[in-house]
Amino acid sequence: MSGVVCFGILGVMKKVTLLAINAKYVHSSLSVWVLAEGIQVFAKYSYDVSVVESTINEPILKIAQTVAELAPDVVCISSYIWNARILPSVISELRACLPNAVFILGGPEAEHNSEFWLNGLADYVLAGEGEYVLPAFLDELTWSGDGADRGTVPLPIDPYTDKFFAALRGRLAYIETSRGCPFSCAFCLSAHESVRFFPLETVSAQIQKLAMSDTKTLKFVDRTFNCDAKRAYAIFEFCLNLDVSCKFHFEVAADLFDERTLDLLETAPIGRFQFEIGLQSFYEPALAASSRQTDLDKVTNNIIRLLRGGNIHIHIDLIAGLPYETLDEFKNSFDRAYNLGAHHLQLGFLKLLHGSVLRSRADELGLVYGGEAPYEIIRSPWLSESDIQILKHTENALQHTYNRGRFLSVLGYVLRVSGLSPFALFRKFGESFPNHGTQLEDYACQIFSFCKELSDVVKEELVDRFLCDWLGMVKGKNAPEFLKPRLASSRKLTGEYEKHLGRKYRRGEAGVLSDGSMVFVDSENRSPVTGLYRVFGQAK
Image (spheres, rainbow, N blue to C red):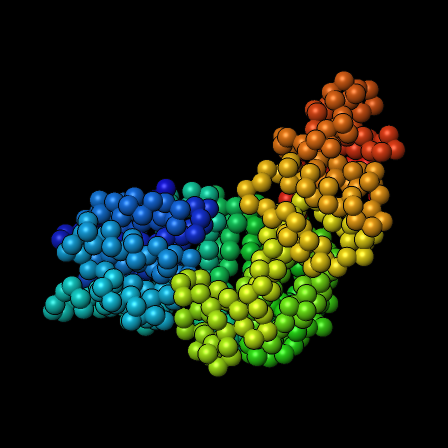
């Protein structure tokens, strides 16, 4: 659904609508609220500002109608890689509905590809920091004469107004505590941007407001949150001292953690923090070609230490398609990353973004990529199109199993006894039965049928592990056929079994292992770190 919030009208003002098109409904947009507050604070004149939040999954006509109903004089749209494909159609519909409106685009897609957007789509493309640039441009565009100067220098603003919280409705919230990045990764648009840190007192006040709202997760959008270890420590400590239930998500560089910070993180409540760690590759020539500065030994040791605490959800990223990394080299990166044991391993693909160094060097390096967003790698001198397809199959299997906390005991057992590497196993899964809308119970049957034929896999032990995994990862789902005989019926759950955890169990909450012993699941409480239910008496 589109979200619309209007700001009060004081006298005659130009009507400005700020449009955000998010990737998912659960996401909120920080940018439009920063722009809205920037207009309030920095514009010399007053404007009637409305905010519309929609998603790429909404019908284009519906998005256009929602905006058109507000009858704006000016429409400002934030452009990103996730909405770039539909923006031309959205703008075309809006122009039909609002023939006299002025259309202004901002954001990375427009800023770094302005020639395309100015060819019949946008009237203007703005570059730079929007909360300062847009108010000044609106003043210049729509008014003449002198106005009251309401501020011209970069100052921290607070976009978290009552109207913002009214529109948030429990969705994921974002906060920016610094701008820029000290590193120069060639695939990133933040390369070579100097870092500007916002005042800690301002940041602390905003964190507290957001953490006490109905959001479940507060995500910090800082490109490398812990690039200043002392500052990162102060914010971690502040978040730890808040008496709130929401989670805090940070994008961090694992090799920048110092001992003092690691000691602090060990004290974090279970599930309070989530870390997304951009590992990208273990192949040093690929990292060097991407101007990626990483101490791989320190990254490895710090990830292992963070995971050992068991209190922080760890997500690590790999990028397939970096220069000089062949399929064999990527397999090695994948296996090393998987064996770290993070809770989520993202296998992403190189995207040649407008404005990135790698895109400017694509012809020189022989990188071939898609002509439309997300500009993903198609082939290179080191990866053929068939290699990319292998990686796509592998990513599909990884995403539908490990990254969703599915069949974790099964995966560990099969990898241990079969001798297959992690990459080889997920590749075989992906190529044998790619998951495209398959029901979970059917997918489980496919995995079971495949795994039971692998060398040294004992069928009874495999079933035991499937049973325990199934109990721990689902609630109320229809079980696969091969597990149904093992699920305990309610008549079996009497006497001593009903006493387990002090309550009775329903069918699907307990099962019988191959040795006749029982396993139980606490299906009322998920782990805040893994998202799984706790299983008692599970197979060893």
